[in-house]
Length: 92
Image 1: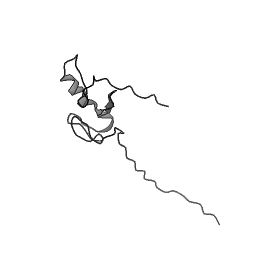
Image 2: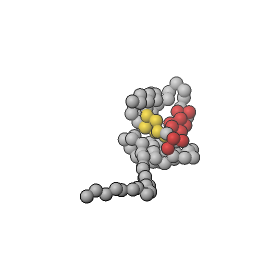
Image 3: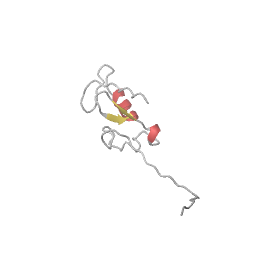
Image 4: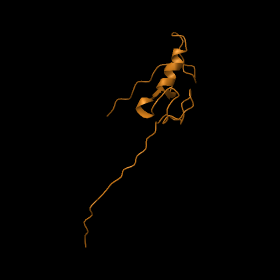
């Protein structure tokens, strides 16, 4: 015996998170899936960026940090290595 099923309504639910190895920004201490103090909206408006050293921060936070440093001596706030943004991995 077989039955036909008709889907009347479907309600999808999803969640996302940044895969940064930590749950909070090392500068502002706010969650990566939330907003930094200068941000208005989470997600694409408050992206997470990584340095070559492997540390991650909200884009707004690291930019503010780098602006407070001398142009010739911009370093990661955690490991003090010279700051360089990590290149995005190519999408497949």
